[in-house]
Length: 324
Image (tube, rainbow, N blue to C red; front, top):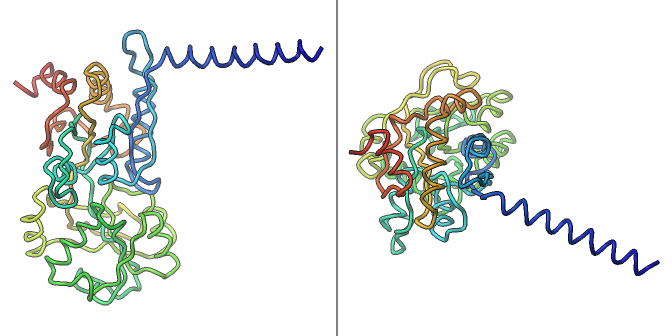
């Protein structure tokens, strides 16, 4: 009896393994590295993954896409260079630095990175507790501010901003290295004065903070920003519209950089072609489910793209007349 039971168990396990192998054989897996759950990368990546999974079939195999949380642009570029994932969202300035081996990537240019297409502008938001006694950037002297992990795009940007405004990173501020979500929690608890956040707006973590606490979004404009733009030419002038967040009753002048959907040169051409086609021919669907989807368009698909396109993406853009 025990022998029969053992045989049945082995057959059942073998059946499950066979079924799993069969399912895997019928699918192509495609990952999208995004950012933390408190930003814009992750929810938009989830919507894009679902749309791709619903729309794309390659050689009779269903493409199964998933969005994975990540540590944003710098980490995503490094992950792509190792071919640790099929695609990722990366800010345009970080992608350019990674490919050319400058700034955070000095001495380790990641030449196998390729672009799939431009997404939406990410807005730089300097979020401050309303009672922190801060009305302009220079008021941050003596205050605590979060910039994200050392070496990240946020960390680099804060350093550039401080230099542009004539402040010293080591002596004039108390720097915190929390993520978006963590920094928001610290602001809630009164343990942090400000957080520098670059993301699509409205940003989930800032929305949640503004709904329960009084905050300000500081303007980033004038001669200091013109000086920054000499260092980081990818940052364009932008407006955070009034009422983006509760209590923000006027427009705020700031800066923004476009997010890029990137991959590596090991991704096959058919997959690259089909995922790009799925995105730019279904932007209306993304617009219905995510506010940033309204800012993604085929017309702007090559904006701020400074590294080589993946051949599959290039083929699609040639078909659409964006490349002659």
